[in-house]
Length: 110
Image (cartoon, rainbow, N blue to C red; front, side, top):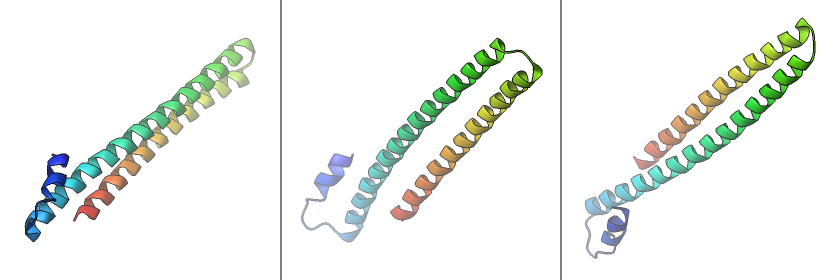
């Protein structure tokens, strides 16, 4: 569809409405591509951070098991809680960024 729209723009004598229609097709395809790139990149970054957090959590739990005392146990629980809060905040941030990109693209198209 994108290739056809680009090819159609080469046609001499197009009226203004047809040019605007083709422009909208091209802009829509570009917006979809940008959204997909942002979404993929943000997903990869989130998964990388999630992996790091899970690894840190596992290491903390291993250290907690090797040491005695309630203080270490409480520390492990705190790390788990912080990990869950961070992942929730990160997911919310990614959702907000995705919505902002989508909104900007929609407003730029109109």
